[in-house]
Length: 160
Image (cartoon, rainbow, N blue to C red; front, side, top):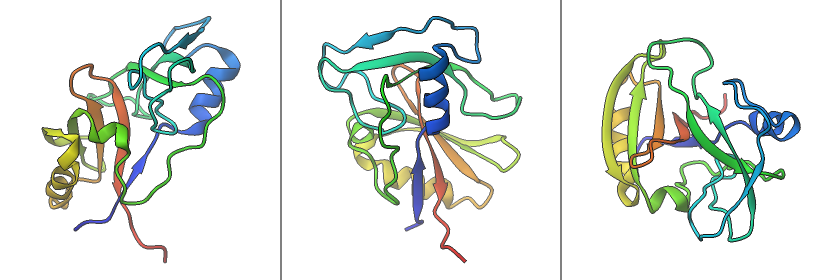
């Protein structure tokens, strides 16, 4: 099995949204949203679903750092107050296990070379298949129904 690491939206992105209440895509005056349903609003930093009554911030985000043809911008939530970034090598967060996901595998040049849907309960099998292709440098996971970005997945390389 290919060792992998799930990378959440960077804490620095969430910190900027919390401080400025605006994003890089024209949304200003971002206000907290209080969740009233369990498992409805997942935070993209801690990769946990908000509890009923918790506040989150909704904003537009692109997982690409530079302009490329596959660059997409979509809505994501982060906790309104700081939370601990997800950091569990080779472990799939529960919120991903309960969702239908769209995975997109990209080359080092940010070209999509693999894409497929997978039930989160068997996510590792598709990660393994994608990383079986040596041209896949990283994977983006999206919620297949809503289309929202969930996380980036990379090969977990041993420290040298």
